[in-house]
Length: 354
Image 1 (cartoon, rainbow, N blue to C red):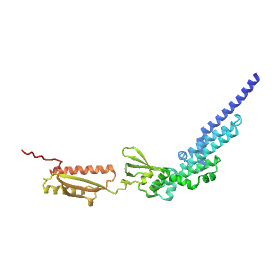
Image 2: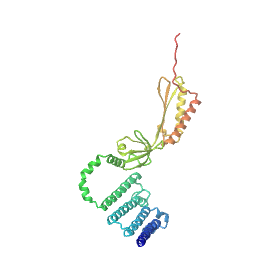
Image 3: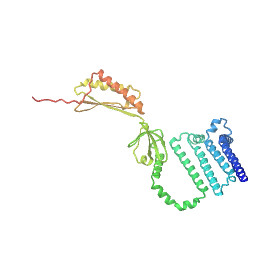
Image 4: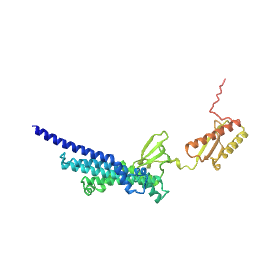
């Protein structure tokens, strides 16, 4: 009996040692993953001396993940015999490691095609410095999508699925019909329309049926708009491509317009002097286009005499336009007071018959 206990204790001690070694392997790769990743990237970017730039490389974090996964995989291989792991389960672990490595590597390649990456900045400078950022970003998104699709196909192949048989089974025509019937395909086509027609770009202030705000991003599926209430709205591209859009950022000038209803018994001399002073005031303002100034006796209505004041200002963005509009309104009010001219109000006179 004592011999059996000793044998069990011996086997257990051996397995415990193996487990400790496996844990040590995992910890080794976990601790030194940063160093190993740094060394590999440094080998390919030997001209870069700044360690911070090396760590900002698109492959730095994916390589760390791959080394950590490698540590787990080597630990499992080490424990295969001591723990008597079945061949079927080992194949499953191997497939999982391969697929995880492919996806992680694809992530590194994908991160190399982002607007902030060094590779993309270099390509943009060499190809065309004046390339529209929105169009360039959209192309990068397509490239990243293709990379992940290819990684998905490789992962499917590693699982032992025959891609030729899969495509033949689905049928190209069936795939196209299925996609055309889905909202996803509509949004994708809508995104392509926005990309080709360029009714707006990221950063533009736009207005459509129910939304108004600044465009923050254009993706395959939707466009993100930051409203003036600071809320974020995701609008499907299929809706945007079929809507009328006002792009306020494309304005070259903005109109100021107001109607002043003056009391009907105001003397004509005062009226003419008021009009002249308002016109001179507008001409003196640098932000106003002189050839656009209109100060006219517009009409007579039941309230009084209507004076139309209209002009265009170069203050296009909303805050500066409001400031310009406020200044003009103050100037007009000052002229009215100096000329002792009263505005008409909606009043009614009632005669009572005795």
